[in-house]
Length: 121
Image (cartoon, rainbow, N blue to C red):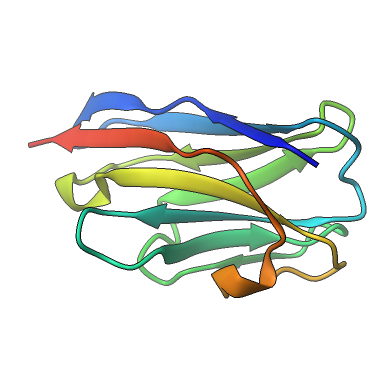
C-alpha cells in the first residue's frame, strides 16, 4: 500500500493544523500511526490507531493532538491544536499490517513521504 501525507505548512504558535494520510488501497485491517522527525533528532512516535479504533498517544501530545481514521475514505488524520515551536518537524504516517497499533517505527511496514510542519513563535 502507498501512503500520501498532506496538510503540513507554516502556522503560528497556538494555531492548528490537520494532517491527512490517504492510502492507495483499503486499509481497514491495518493499524495506522503518526510519527515526526525534527532536524538532528530521531523519529518520534506521536499516536496510533488500531484497525478497531483503539488509540494510544505519546504523552507529550496527549490532549493537543487527535488521531482518527475514515476507512471509507482510506484516510487517517492527525488534528493538531495548540501548536508549539517545538512541534516543528517532518510528520510521517505509517501503516502496520496488524490489528493493533505500535509506538515503534520498526513495526510499521509502509510509510508516507512526510509533510513539513513549521510552527513560528
